[in-house]
Amino acid sequence: MHNQNRKEEKTWGASGAVSTFHTTMSGKSNKPLLEVKNLKTYFHSDSGTVKAVDDVSFFVNEGETLGIVGESGCGKSISSMSILRLVETPPGKYEGGEILFEGQDMLTISDDEMRKVRGNKISFIFQEPMTSLNPIFKIGDQLSETMILHRGMSKKEAWEESIRLLDLVRIPNPERVVGEYPFALSGGMRQRAMIAMSLACEPKLLIADEPTTALDVTIQAQVLDLMNDLKKKINASIIFITHDLGVIAEMSDRVMVMYAGKVVETASVQDIFLNPSHPYTIGLINSKPDMSTSSDRLHVIPGGVPDLSQKPSGCPFHPRCDKVTDKCTKEFPPETAISDQHKVFCWACQGKQEEGSKWQKH
Ligand SMILES: Nc1ncnc2c1ncn2[C@@H]1O[C@H](COP(=O)(O)OP(=O)(O)O)[C@@H](O)[C@H]1O
Ligand code: SF4
Ligand SMILES: [Mg+2]
Image 1 (tube, rainbow, N blue to C red):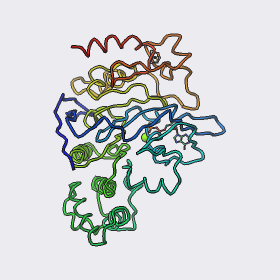
Image 2 (tube, rainbow, N blue to C red; image 1 turned 180 degrees about the vertical axis):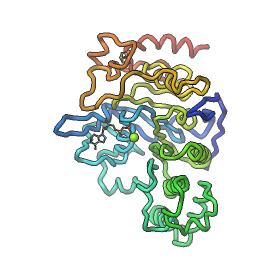
Image 3 (cartoon, rainbow, N blue to C red; image 1 turned 180 degrees about the horizontal axis):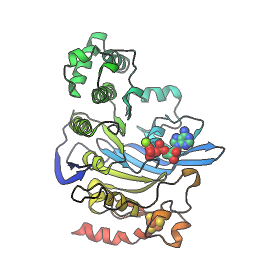
Image 4 (spheres, helix red, strand yellow; image 1 turned 30 degrees about the horizontal axis):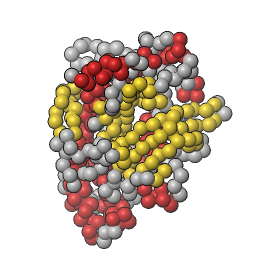
């Protein structure tokens, strides 16, 4: 177990609640645990091809939390499900790219090898806990099964470890809850039990896909607090997916913004909030709810996420963008590196490298 000392950088109002974003001071390395290169996951149907993940590249370093943010329908879930080949095929199809985890390409390993990775080295926390909890088995049996299988524990050891895990995720009375069935727990407690399940195998990578979206605001805050606490205690990398920038601020070291199946900007959490560059990122930040005004939203980005079977040409954000030029409608922009860690895909951001490097010198 290692320790991560985090420094509070800035307070940020999110969903009406005041939250904070943190910088990990240690515990992260610059060594990638996962590298996704030019991933293409498409859906083919009679009405056309949906490029849900359209040439997407990203990485997650050891011990770091990558936040993935974007409106609903932008390809966040399909990108993360592709890592474990969880996309149903057909209608889905992995059309290209590489997903390198510990030197193996997740897209080409055998089904047997993939089963060893799933729920062992990489685990998934879903939005709806009942997708992972089996209603007919006691919580303790479900937790134990993983530990007997993946960690070679005896039944007794696994039962005791289950109690410890339930305690770790702050479930009151873990000795009692370990013998309960999932339906006996409230939604918030079920979500905690699922987090315990995802930790049972001691994964190297934890993928949490909108794990708090279905919960009410108070329980959501408690679960996020718990995950931040766990982040300090477990030696895992995390991919945290959400459409809520407040949650991103609270959870991430680095942020990747997705729009219409494309990565449009990646940067440290500080740069995303203090120096956002892509018009979509700026729009998302400006449309955060602000409690200091009577209106719900400051500015809402006009229009909506397109139907991805009819993705706009060039930069798919162009119909909603106030900086659009003719070029934007014709060609997807190349990557602009504003700084080492800050990358953006936008024609209007070309030349921003200058600003970025000047800014870095100070
Ligand atoms: N089974 C499917 N068949 C066809 N299209 C799908 C299917 N699942 C997802 N999609 C499409 O893929 C795109 C990305 O979806 P998703 O990754 O779930 O978005 P997000 O998680 O960002 O809300 C959406 O446009 C969605 O309509
Ligand atoms: S490439 Fe053009 S349309 Fe796309 S975000 Fe940049 S300015 Fe807007
Ligand atoms: Mg999703």
